[in-house]
Image (cartoon, rainbow, N blue to C red; front, side, top):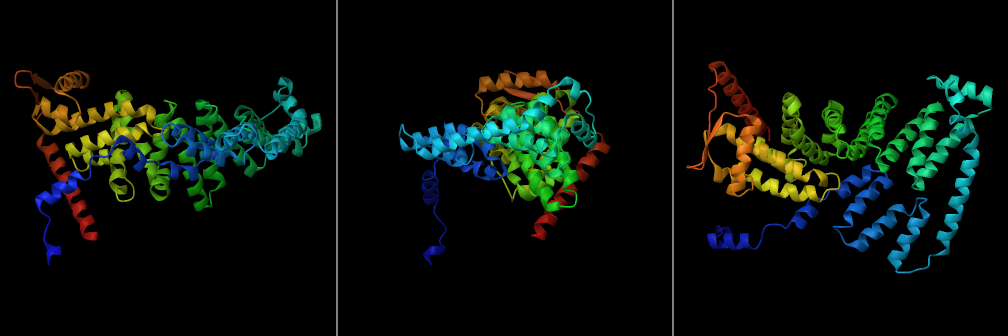
Amino acid sequence: MAANVPPSAETLLSGAAAHPPKTAEEIANQYNLLPKLIPYLDRHLVFPLLEFSSGQDDEKEVVRAKYELLKHTNMTDYVANLWKEINDSDNIPDEFVKKREEVLAKLQQYEDESAKITQLLQDESVVANLRSDKVANLKFLEEQHGVTVEMVNSLYDYGRFQYSCGSYGNAAELLYQFRVLSTDNDKVASATWGKFASEILTTSWEAAMEEVQKVKDSIETRLFNNPLGQLQNRSWLIHWSLFPFFNHDPARDVLIDLFFSPAYINTIQTNCPWILRYLAAAVITNRNRAHKSSSVYQKQLKDLIRVVRQEGYEYNDPITDFVKALYVDFDFEEAQKKLGEAEDVLRSDFFLVSTADAFVEAARHLISESYCKIHQRIDIKDLSTRLGLNQDEGEKWIVNLIRDTRVDAKIDYKEGTVIMNHPPQSVYQQVIEKTKGAFFRTQVLSAAVAK
C-alpha cells in the first residue's frame, strides 16, 4: 500500500538537491558525437578530431587512440614516436625500422615508375595539346610520348601511397593528374574522394569545395541505380563536408542548401540525424551575416524548425532543443536554459568551437525578436534574465537591438520597460494567421491521435 503513496514535497526537494546542475564537462561528455562521426570519416580525417580531444580527455587514452588509428598507415616515424610515448621508451622495436625502410623503398619505386608521365604533365607544350576528351588525350600521349595505361595507373597508386604517408599536398597533385587522364570510372571516383580528403587536410578550402561538387556529381551519376550506395556515399559526403562547412565562410550557404535539398535531408533523417546539430548551428549563426537577404534566412530557419520538429524523437541535443523551445514550444525559460547548455556543447565540439560566440549572439537576437513579437510592454530586467545578461548589459543589448533592427519601440528608462508599437494587422492577415494556427493545432491533434 505504501508503494502507492505519492512522494511528499520534502522528498521531491531532497531528490532535486541530489541531482545538481550538470557541469560544462558533463554536458560536453553527454553530447559528444565523436563515436558517431568516426565511422563516416577516413582515418586521416579522424586525426584532427583526436588532436582536439587531447585537451579534454585523458591524455594517455588519446595517445593510444592515435596509435591505434594510424598504426596501419605509412606514417612510420610518427607512429613510432607514439609507440615510444605509450611505452615510455627511447627505443623502438625492429619492426618499425623495417617498415620505415620498406616505405622509403616503395616511395622510390613509385617515383621511378611515374617519373616519365609526371615530367610530361609538367611540360607546358604537352599540356597545351590536351583536351577534355580523355580517350583522345591518352591516344596523343601514347603515340607521341609512349605513355601507357600502366603509367597513368601508377599516378593513382603513387598518390594513394603519398596520402598514406601523410604527404597530402603531393597526394592531391598526383590524384588530380591521374583524374585528368584516366577513363577508369571506379578509380576516378576513388581518386576524387582522395583528393577531397587531401584538400581538407591541407586546409585548401576553395579546392575542397570544388571536390564537394565533383563527389556529389559522381554519386548522382555513377550510383544512379544503387539507392543503398547513394545513401552511404551521401552520408560520407555530409560528414566530410563539415570540415569546409565551418572553416570556409563562402561554403556556408552552399552547404546549407545542399543539406536541405530533398536527397540530403532525407539522408540525414534516415542515416545520421546527429548532423542536425551542425545544420542548426550553421543556420542560427547565419543570422549574423544574412541581413543582405533576410528572406533567404527566414526560409532556412523555417526549414530548420520543420526538421527539428519532425526528428525530435530521433535525435536531440541542447542546440536542437534550443530551436524547439523557442520556435515549437515558445518556452522562453527553456530556451534560455538550453542556450547555456548549447554553449558548453559548442565549445567542446571540434567543428563548432569557433562558432560558439557567434551562436550565442545570434541566439540572443532570436530570443529577443520572438519575445518582442508577442509582448506589448517588456520588462527590461525580465528580458535581460531570459538572455542570460545582467540589467545593465540587457539594457545596452536592447538599445542596440532596436537600433540595428529598426523596430518601432520606445524605452521608458524610469519604468525600466520597452514599449513595442506593433502595427495593427489587417482583417485579412488576422484570418490568415488564425487559419494557420487552427491548421497547426489540427495537425498536432491528428499526430497525437495517431500515436
